[in-house]
Each structure stands twice: as structure tokens, then as C-alpha cells.
Image (cartoon, rainbow, N blue to C red; front, top):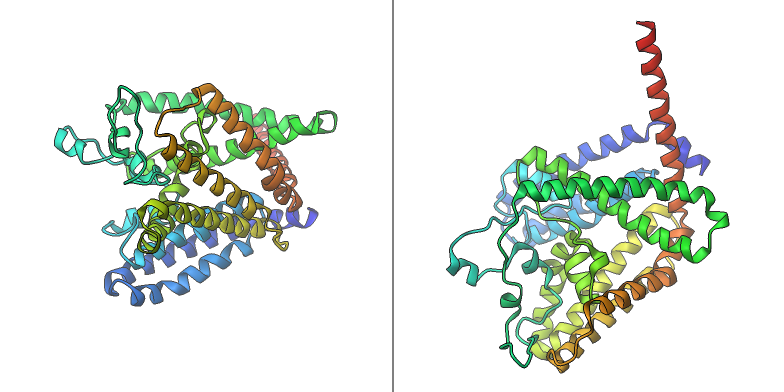
Length: 400
């Protein structure tokens, strides 16, 4: 721990800035390489040095926040975007250079503009649900009740009238102000962790992870919105209101990852499985492959944070959830809407299952790499820095 704080004091911020300058220079190269190279293997070969660099750069960082952010944004998401760009898929083709540089390295997605043309609405899905309903088998999953006709997923997720942007921003500002206060309270609670029930502490860990990711992604989105002047799609959608695992992973939790995994992993596996298994069964291996890739990428991020050999618990966590989502899809198809849990009961069971499995398989590996301890030390260092700056400014004002 002392070594990590030594690195922090000896120029971690400078290293972080240099790394991100190299990232932007690399993406600048990728932008023009994509213009010159034909789609497919030639373009991929030009991208491989950058992809390899992006896998290595988190190793130059020791701060858990700087390293974790860079690993998630660049080693995972940016690399997947570049892999899709090599075959002219994903969010990067046809972008201007400024938009390319920002969207390639940040976990953001430009909001799809609403149109008033009813014919277009009939054949389109909202930007969010088109990307997030990727666990639903497009041709098999239908919902039917005694009084409701069978509807396709596109019809089920038909877009509602948009809420005014100003109203959304006001609600978002209040929400994130409350989350910031709650985050501060959690950090203070850790000072009394020795006298708190371990189960309660683990629940607090889960809440801490959610708030930290949500706040960081919101800050990034706000900066990108200010630079680009564009409306961006949300990164979280109130995961604490999930009514099922499919709802949690497909429509509410860390939506930027869903928007990348769907075209990069789920859709290709779905197409391959469709050829050999048929559309009826293709969904299930595609779901399992997607969760496995997510698990492996989490293992990579854990390695960056702790620099310790992986124990694969987090991979098993995602495989378990993938299997449960696959079972849930199969049950929904078999029951065809004839039996549904009440919403509140579904939410309670979903959150309970997520919390228990996080405690069992997700958190132990994270705690072993001391990510939380390092994070708290960095909070303390930041607090001391802000305090010193405040004292210096006060003394300067008095002396003048």
C-alpha cells in the first residue's frame, strides 16, 4: 500500500495524462487507417499494434481509480470498438474525427434522435431497447395473455414520447447529488467497519461499486456532452428496480457494456449457432458466450488492479448468471406469459440473488487484490490535497 501511495505522490497524474495522450494519438492513427485500409483482415492488421498497446497501458498505472478507468474504457471497450470497426461494424464508422476520438475511448453512445414520422416509429426501436433487448430471441420470444395479442419485442418496446431534455437533466442533477452524498457517507462508514455486521459491510461494498461506477460514467458523459454538444444515452437505468435477471443485465446495469457486447459477441454467436442449431436454440449459446466474454474481461481488469494470478471466481459468477438468464428465457417461452411474478416480488428475488452471488463469487477476488483498501487510501490522499489547497488559498487571501 505504501508503494502505491509512493507512486501516487511521484507523478501518477503525470503518467495518467501521458498515457491518455498516447491513447488519442493511437486513435488518430486508427481513424486514418480505417479510411485507407479495406474492410476486414487488412484493416484489422493495421489495428493490432494499437489493440496490443491498449492491453498493456494499464500496467503503467498504480492508482486503482486511474488504472481501473483506463482498463475499462480502453483495454475493454475501446478495443472491442476497434475490432468491430475493422469489419465496419459498431459505433465508429462514418464518424467525424472529433466524434471518433471521443466515442472510441469513452463509454458513451450518442442518443438516437426521435422522429415524428409514425411509419418510421413502426419499424424502429428506441435507441435504448434496440441495443438492450439482446437477450430476447427476436423470432421466438413472444408475450401472450388472454386479452393481449402476441407482440414482437419491437412492438413490446415501442418507443414512448420523449421526456424534455431539460427535465431529464434536472432530475439527473438531483439524483447524482444525492448519490454523491451517499458515496461520502459510505466512505465514512468504513471507519466503523470493525463494529458493523460483515453481511451489512458486504451489502455496502455492493452499493459502493454501483455508486462509484455510476458517478464516474456520469462525469465522463457530462464532459463528453459539453465537448460534443450532443445528447447521450444513459449508462445505468435504475438497476435496483430490476424485475428479473434478464431485465437487470439486459436493460438496466452498465448499459454501455451491453451496447458493445451485443454486436461484438452476442450477434455473431447467434448467427453461427443459428446455422448449426436453428433459431429456436441459438439464443442460449449466444447468451452463454456473451457472459463468458464479460467474465474474462472482468478477470483482466482484476489483474490490472491487483497484479495477482486470477482465480476465475468472477468468470464463474458471469457463467452462473448467464445460465440463469438462459433458463429464464426458456421459462418465459414455455409459459408464454401465463404465469408472472408480481413486480415487487420479482425485484426482491432478483436483487437478493445478485447480492448473494456477488458476495459469493464477485467480491472475494476484488477484496484479495485490495482494490477497496487502495481506493480508500486514494480518497484520503485526495482529501488531504484538497485540505492543503484550501489552507494555502486561505493564507494567501489573508496575506494579501
